[in-house]
Image 1 (cartoon, rainbow, N blue to C red):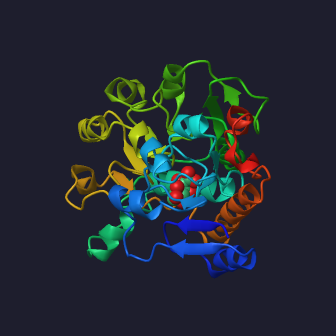
Image 2: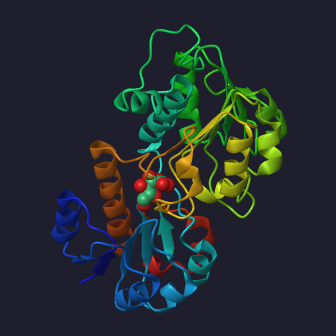
Length: 329
Ligand code: 8YV
């Protein structure tokens, strides 16, 4: 019988499907994610690991689990898993792409609109009883329509954001490692600098890699328009938060909305939380009931396929492990 560890609670449907397949399922039951040392202990005799962003799955964790054949990440980003280490050991690494693109794009667009039309800060003022007499020059926001959106990283999620922006009559630029076919009328720009200089809103959709860590730092903020706003729904480390704080307080950019931070959760006394022009959400871009259920079921499908000796439907390292895959042994 295959043993599967799920490192956070999950949907009943997902657990049931694993049980019906005859697996032994261990669900980490503590209120907080297992720490690294706890994970090392918990993986000892597992065949499949259903992991989350809070788990650092490195070579040592893999070595602590000699039977481990397949790891699935609950999410499209899998920067918390050492894929090179998995390749060396023939362990399949999987994720949940596609099904969360629209929910993530919805949230990115919601953040863009909240910053632009000030639905993040004006309601607070009303609640404080500070809604003053009518003043044509007060509470001014920025338009969304006919403004320029710069998308960094034109993958599935970036494409969905471009589609939404087109519906709002925005002009869309994108910067990507390679030029894609015209994505919903978006225009390719060959440098990040150009995108930053021309955009009224900049939305980040690139994965976190060594190259994209700190991609948005003080030099980049200085290139942006003073009226521009940054939206980050990818990974916290893509933005240098100290540089962002400086840019927001110095008026180098007008605002920022972050779904992701460093660390997560961000401490309540973090300087960014003192700023009215910074909106922070608790990493929830994919967090709708429908999407999270689909993600859980995709994780289950990945693990069950791997443990049955088949290639999981969303395996990210199939080409790298085709000669030494443990699922094929
Ligand atoms: C996940 C995400 O909810 O897909 C991703 O990359 O960031 C989110 O959808 C998060 O990774 C939790 O595991």
